[in-house]
Image (cartoon, one colour):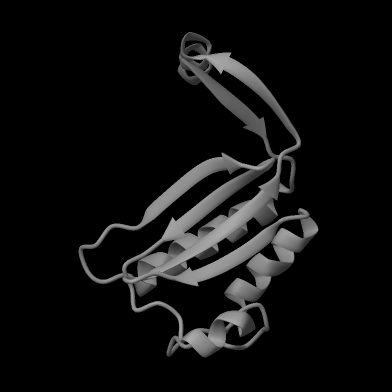
Length: 130
């Protein structure tokens, strides 16, 4: 078997802030004792990162407006979180896509692939042992 390894170039502080914001939002929106899911995969020269929860999702009319500051449905939310994630993605030539599922929500970050290499399973395991 073979695996692809990808490089993502960006500002570690900004990217960490974006990921932390999405994970925190998913945890806050989630129903008690339900897991959140973080999936990373490759599709059409992009690295995709999905953060999924089991919450109530977003109001359908608000999904297109989520990248505008100060639009929050949370009682104590400022509405700046997703706006900041959108700005961070713009700076990294990436995209954010938000979709309600039958249960919960999926937020997808899409990054352009900078570089990639093909590894065998054995090579991949050696790298992960470091």
